[in-house]
Length: 127
Image 1 (tube, rainbow, N blue to C red):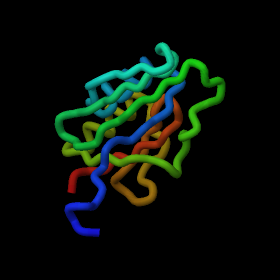
Image 2: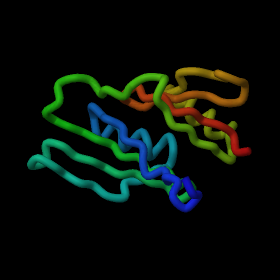
Image 3: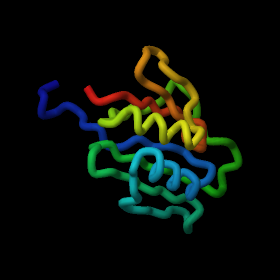
């Protein structure tokens, strides 16, 4: 594949059991903000897209009020990662929030947090 044809990261979709709780989490933990919102099936399904100025990553929170089961993507195998300039300050914030689920794993100097749905997010210091 030619370099001009290589895929670009578009977004990471996260199923959420509570849309407002997830929005609040991503705002506080990773400085994301809502950029747009789309509703389907008369508002039963809502997609909220979140962005921040420092990252090309877009997060799509998907809420379906008619879905009875827990979000299917929760867990440690699927995750996204973010590099942060002030790693100690971010780690402190996450400790205060109580959202850290794994320290220094798989190597020292990083940690994982979990969002309200149990999806893991890797936090790394800037290179």
